[in-house]
Length: 129
Image (cartoon, rainbow, N blue to C red):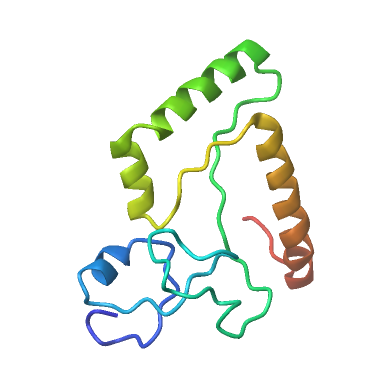
């Protein structure tokens, strides 16, 4: 983009520093809601791609059978880390928003994402090598 070799780029966040520096123009965001960092930038859905939502979810996984007390301790420490300004700022620099949730909320969200994209993966015949 900066070298003039691309006219369009769907970026998961690394190019946002160039937007803030005025070197690139952010046309829209792929999530269902406007970004708190760029409240004046419309979503792709608002821009004419009705229903478009390519929001991401990040999480920490543990092996099946991990003791509940360990899971609870990890959750507590992760929530604390997300509240540290330097950590939150690093996440925001990637175009994301720290959004701690309970284990149950994460499982529910993950299930919705699997349902949403599972059919697409099957229809396209995507496979892991």
